[in-house]
Length: 330
Image (cartoon, rainbow, N blue to C red):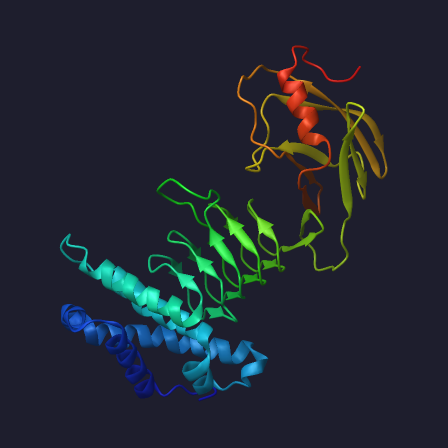
């Protein structure tokens, strides 16, 4: 197939998948939409297929091989069918959403990847080795995105998540490495590269590379592979940030949901190259304690780093917020 797609064969493939997956009664309910469904889904699938053949060196550009034997491509093929069925207008009897979910589930069974039919995925989408990947209901993915196996584009909570926008929005030309998790309604800009095993819970600006070094989420705005290494810890009623830091960097305490902690001020007591030290002040009273563990964000002009649960920070802040004095340290 290579750079040429036999559209007649592709139409036949899509029809065969529908017939194998759906009950005769469901096929009958689709009858009035069947021709347009296959025609429009085939256009989407053809672009996905060419993108896969172009970007995956292991396929050697053999589109026919991908279509017939690549399990991860089955997830995308069934998503394209399910998404269009999901959006058919109908009376409020839930027939088309039920059919869409049946198609989506078949794609999951064949590929190990789960894509909700309501998710919005742009053109030329590549899901490579997609086993274990989950793409949530309100997720939006732009054009020319490439996602590997074990990726979760999910909600921030585990159970009882609220309705509405709760899944990520990815821009165009975003690459997500194996095992990465992008959680909550976060905005991932265009041309972002997310390395394997990252946990992303905050917006990522366009043109950024994100990678995890131990427990550090590192975002860089340049093209360099050089990393900024930082560490933090709380000791003797002081917060210490060490590594590639200086007095111009901004330090913020975040709760377990990565929101800035209200009612807390960091007073610099040491400002040296490679070492910042802070005394923490409670500036307002709040009976509610933050969700633990606490995290630390360090922002500079060229990078933003989130340090996950620095040693001693959660205990020190919790003690501060529970104590009657408004200042820790002297």
